[in-house]
Image (spheres, helix red, strand yellow):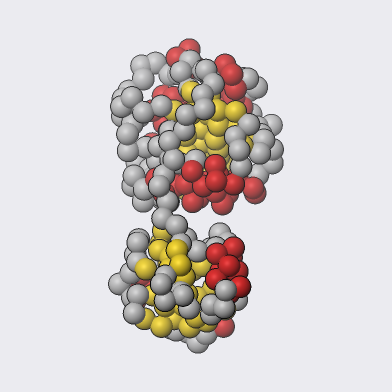
Length: 261
Protein backbone atom coordinates (compact mmCIF):
# COMPACT_ATOMS: atom_id res chain seq x y z
CA UNK A 1 0.00 0.00 0.00
CA UNK A 2 1.57 3.27 -1.16
CA UNK A 3 1.99 6.31 1.08
CA UNK A 4 1.58 9.87 -0.18
CA UNK A 5 2.53 12.80 2.06
CA UNK A 6 1.23 16.32 1.56
CA UNK A 7 3.07 19.49 2.54
CA UNK A 8 1.53 22.78 1.41
CA UNK A 9 0.91 26.40 2.33
CA UNK A 10 -2.86 26.05 1.78
CA UNK A 11 -4.04 26.17 5.38
CA UNK A 12 -7.28 24.50 6.42
CA UNK A 13 -9.93 27.18 5.88
CA UNK A 14 -10.42 26.50 2.17
CA UNK A 15 -11.22 23.43 0.09
CA UNK A 16 -7.78 23.06 -1.50
CA UNK A 17 -6.44 20.17 0.58
CA UNK A 18 -9.71 18.27 0.38
CA UNK A 19 -9.78 18.64 -3.40
CA UNK A 20 -6.28 17.18 -3.66
CA UNK A 21 -7.22 14.22 -1.52
CA UNK A 22 -10.40 13.60 -3.48
CA UNK A 23 -8.46 13.32 -6.74
CA UNK A 24 -5.89 11.02 -5.14
CA UNK A 25 -8.57 8.69 -3.79
CA UNK A 26 -10.45 8.63 -7.11
CA UNK A 27 -7.36 7.29 -8.85
CA UNK A 28 -5.71 5.31 -6.06
CA UNK A 29 -8.32 4.54 -3.38
CA UNK A 30 -6.03 2.17 -1.48
CA UNK A 31 -3.35 4.81 -0.93
CA UNK A 32 -2.59 6.22 2.51
CA UNK A 33 -2.46 10.02 2.47
CA UNK A 34 -0.56 11.68 5.32
CA UNK A 35 -0.91 15.40 6.01
CA UNK A 36 2.51 16.65 7.08
CA UNK A 37 1.48 20.30 7.34
CA UNK A 38 -0.63 22.77 5.44
CA UNK A 39 0.56 25.68 7.54
CA UNK A 40 3.74 26.60 5.68
CA UNK A 41 3.75 30.43 5.56
CA UNK A 42 2.29 31.44 2.19
CA UNK A 43 4.86 31.28 -0.62
CA UNK A 44 7.72 30.55 1.81
CA UNK A 45 9.68 28.04 -0.25
CA UNK A 46 12.53 27.89 2.29
CA UNK A 47 10.15 26.86 5.07
CA UNK A 48 8.76 24.14 2.81
CA UNK A 49 12.26 22.94 1.98
CA UNK A 50 13.06 22.67 5.69
CA UNK A 51 9.94 20.60 6.37
CA UNK A 52 10.69 18.22 3.50
CA UNK A 53 14.25 17.87 4.79
CA UNK A 54 12.98 16.77 8.18
CA UNK A 55 10.05 14.49 7.41
CA UNK A 56 11.13 12.12 4.68
CA UNK A 57 13.34 9.89 6.84
CA UNK A 58 10.36 9.04 9.03
CA UNK A 59 8.70 7.21 6.12
CA UNK A 60 9.34 3.86 4.45
CA UNK A 61 11.10 3.54 1.09
CA UNK A 62 9.24 4.66 -2.05
CA UNK A 63 6.97 7.05 -0.18
CA UNK A 64 5.74 9.84 -2.47
CA UNK A 65 6.24 13.26 -0.90
CA UNK A 66 4.16 16.00 -2.50
CA UNK A 67 5.31 19.53 -1.67
CA UNK A 68 3.24 22.42 -3.00
CA UNK A 69 4.65 25.79 -2.01
CA UNK A 70 4.31 27.28 -5.43
CA UNK A 71 4.27 31.06 -5.88
CA UNK A 72 4.99 30.52 -9.59
CA UNK A 73 1.90 28.38 -10.19
CA UNK A 74 0.51 28.82 -13.69
CA UNK A 75 3.78 30.08 -15.15
CA UNK A 76 6.29 28.10 -17.18
CA UNK A 77 8.14 26.94 -14.04
CA UNK A 78 8.63 23.17 -14.31
CA UNK A 79 7.23 20.52 -12.01
CA UNK A 80 9.68 17.77 -11.16
CA UNK A 81 9.63 14.25 -9.78
CA UNK A 82 12.94 13.63 -8.00
CA UNK A 83 14.09 10.38 -6.42
CA UNK A 84 16.49 10.63 -3.50
CA UNK A 85 17.45 7.76 -1.19
CA UNK A 86 14.65 5.61 -2.65
CA UNK A 87 12.00 8.24 -1.87
CA UNK A 88 10.04 10.32 -4.38
CA UNK A 89 9.53 14.08 -4.20
CA UNK A 90 6.92 15.70 -6.42
CA UNK A 91 7.50 19.45 -6.23
CA UNK A 92 7.66 22.64 -8.28
CA UNK A 93 11.17 23.31 -9.50
CA UNK A 94 11.59 26.38 -7.32
CA UNK A 95 14.06 25.21 -4.70
CA UNK A 96 11.75 23.09 -2.54
CA UNK A 97 14.19 20.23 -2.96
CA UNK A 98 17.31 22.23 -2.00
CA UNK A 99 17.97 20.87 1.49
CA UNK A 100 17.50 17.24 0.44
CA UNK A 101 19.76 17.82 -2.55
CA UNK A 102 22.46 19.07 -0.19
CA UNK A 103 22.46 15.71 1.58
CA UNK A 104 22.02 13.27 -1.31
CA UNK A 105 22.62 12.95 -5.01
CA UNK A 106 19.39 12.31 -6.93
CA UNK A 107 18.91 8.83 -8.30
CA UNK A 108 16.86 10.37 -11.09
CA UNK A 109 14.87 13.51 -11.83
CA UNK A 110 11.98 13.70 -14.30
CA UNK A 111 10.10 16.68 -15.66
CA UNK A 112 6.36 16.20 -15.13
CA UNK A 113 5.03 16.68 -18.66
CA UNK A 114 2.75 13.72 -19.46
CA UNK A 115 -0.58 15.50 -19.81
CA UNK A 116 -2.42 12.17 -19.99
CA UNK A 117 -1.90 11.94 -16.24
CA UNK A 118 -3.40 15.35 -15.48
CA UNK A 119 -6.98 16.29 -14.62
CA UNK A 120 -8.96 18.13 -17.25
CA UNK A 121 -9.14 21.02 -17.55
CA UNK A 122 -5.90 22.11 -15.88
CA UNK A 123 -6.57 25.43 -14.18
CA UNK A 124 -3.51 27.70 -14.06
CA UNK A 125 -4.01 28.58 -10.39
CA UNK A 126 -4.59 25.06 -9.03
CA UNK A 127 -1.87 22.73 -10.26
CA UNK A 128 -1.95 21.04 -6.85
CA UNK A 129 -5.30 19.48 -7.67
CA UNK A 130 -4.97 19.18 -11.43
CA UNK A 131 -1.35 17.98 -11.78
CA UNK A 132 0.32 17.14 -8.47
CA UNK A 133 -2.54 15.08 -7.01
CA UNK A 134 -3.26 12.86 -10.05
CA UNK A 135 0.42 12.29 -10.81
CA UNK A 136 1.06 11.27 -7.19
CA UNK A 137 -1.91 8.92 -7.33
CA UNK A 138 -0.74 7.25 -10.54
CA UNK A 139 2.71 6.78 -9.00
CA UNK A 140 1.07 5.24 -5.95
CA UNK A 141 -0.64 2.75 -8.27
CA UNK A 142 2.72 1.70 -9.63
CA UNK A 143 3.37 4.04 -12.55
CA UNK A 144 7.05 4.06 -13.50
CA UNK A 145 8.71 7.41 -12.82
CA UNK A 146 9.91 7.65 -16.41
CA UNK A 147 6.29 7.75 -17.55
CA UNK A 148 5.72 11.23 -16.05
CA UNK A 149 8.12 12.86 -18.50
CA UNK A 150 11.72 13.07 -19.69
CA UNK A 151 14.69 12.98 -17.37
CA UNK A 152 16.58 16.15 -16.56
CA UNK A 153 19.69 17.20 -14.70
CA UNK A 154 18.66 20.84 -14.37
CA UNK A 155 17.33 21.76 -10.94
CA UNK A 156 16.75 25.15 -9.40
CA UNK A 157 18.26 25.55 -5.94
CA UNK A 158 17.66 28.16 -3.28
CA UNK A 159 20.59 30.35 -2.36
CA UNK A 160 20.61 29.45 1.31
CA UNK A 161 22.38 31.68 3.81
CA UNK A 162 25.47 29.94 5.14
CA UNK A 163 27.14 30.44 8.51
CA UNK A 164 30.46 32.24 8.43
CA UNK A 165 33.41 32.97 10.64
CA UNK A 166 33.70 36.59 11.70
CA UNK A 167 36.90 38.61 11.99
CA UNK A 168 36.39 38.52 15.78
CA UNK A 169 36.71 34.75 15.79
CA UNK A 170 33.00 34.18 16.36
CA UNK A 171 30.56 32.11 14.33
CA UNK A 172 27.75 34.04 12.63
CA UNK A 173 24.48 32.53 11.49
CA UNK A 174 20.97 33.60 10.53
CA UNK A 175 17.43 32.66 11.50
CA UNK A 176 15.96 30.67 8.62
CA UNK A 177 12.67 29.57 10.20
CA UNK A 178 10.30 30.50 13.02
CA UNK A 179 8.15 27.60 14.21
CA UNK A 180 4.64 27.81 15.66
CA UNK A 181 6.05 28.12 19.19
CA UNK A 182 8.04 31.18 18.22
CA UNK A 183 11.35 29.32 18.37
CA UNK A 184 14.08 30.76 16.15
CA UNK A 185 15.72 28.11 13.99
CA UNK A 186 19.16 29.03 12.67
CA UNK A 187 21.33 27.76 9.83
CA UNK A 188 24.07 26.65 12.25
CA UNK A 189 24.47 22.89 12.57
CA UNK A 190 26.77 20.80 14.81
CA UNK A 191 29.38 20.50 12.06
CA UNK A 192 29.81 24.28 12.04
CA UNK A 193 29.82 24.36 15.83
CA UNK A 194 32.48 21.65 16.02
CA UNK A 195 34.67 23.53 13.56
CA UNK A 196 34.21 26.68 15.62
CA UNK A 197 35.14 25.06 18.95
CA UNK A 198 38.05 23.18 17.38
CA UNK A 199 39.56 26.57 16.60
CA UNK A 200 39.15 27.64 20.20
CA UNK A 201 35.73 29.25 19.95
CA UNK A 202 33.20 29.17 22.75
CA UNK A 203 29.57 28.04 22.84
CA UNK A 204 27.89 31.15 24.19
CA UNK A 205 25.07 32.36 21.99
CA UNK A 206 23.88 35.87 21.23
CA UNK A 207 20.86 37.04 19.29
CA UNK A 208 21.89 40.38 17.87
CA UNK A 209 23.07 42.31 20.92
CA UNK A 210 21.22 40.08 23.39
CA UNK A 211 23.09 37.49 25.44
CA UNK A 212 21.26 34.12 25.38
CA UNK A 213 23.83 31.96 27.16
CA UNK A 214 25.56 28.64 26.56
CA UNK A 215 24.11 25.91 24.38
CA UNK A 216 21.99 23.62 26.54
CA UNK A 217 20.11 20.34 26.06
CA UNK A 218 16.47 21.37 26.41
CA UNK A 219 14.02 24.10 27.37
CA UNK A 220 13.75 23.12 31.05
CA UNK A 221 17.46 23.72 31.55
CA UNK A 222 16.50 27.34 32.23
CA UNK A 223 13.68 28.79 34.38
CA UNK A 224 10.28 29.50 32.84
CA UNK A 225 10.38 32.72 30.86
CA UNK A 226 14.13 32.64 30.31
CA UNK A 227 15.89 32.26 26.95
CA UNK A 228 17.68 29.09 25.98
CA UNK A 229 19.90 28.02 23.08
CA UNK A 230 19.93 24.34 22.11
CA UNK A 231 20.24 21.96 19.16
CA UNK A 232 16.69 21.33 17.99
CA UNK A 233 15.04 18.34 16.38
CA UNK A 234 16.16 19.50 12.93
CA UNK A 235 19.78 19.29 14.04
CA UNK A 236 20.16 23.07 13.95
CA UNK A 237 20.93 25.64 16.62
CA UNK A 238 17.73 27.22 17.93
CA UNK A 239 16.79 29.95 20.39
CA UNK A 240 13.62 29.71 22.47
CA UNK A 241 11.96 31.06 25.57
CA UNK A 242 11.01 28.35 28.06
CA UNK A 243 7.18 28.36 27.81
CA UNK A 244 7.27 31.61 25.86
CA UNK A 245 7.87 32.98 22.36
CA UNK A 246 11.37 34.07 21.39
CA UNK A 247 10.19 35.77 18.21
CA UNK A 248 7.86 38.12 20.08
CA UNK A 249 10.03 38.58 23.16
CA UNK A 250 13.07 39.57 21.12
CA UNK A 251 11.27 41.08 18.13
CA UNK A 252 13.24 38.66 15.98
CA UNK A 253 12.43 36.71 12.86
CA UNK A 254 13.77 35.54 9.53
CA UNK A 255 17.33 36.72 8.85
CA UNK A 256 17.99 37.87 12.43
CA UNK A 257 21.66 37.40 13.27
CA UNK A 258 22.81 34.72 15.71
CA UNK A 259 26.38 34.72 17.01
CA UNK A 260 28.29 31.95 18.79
CA UNK A 261 31.42 32.93 20.67
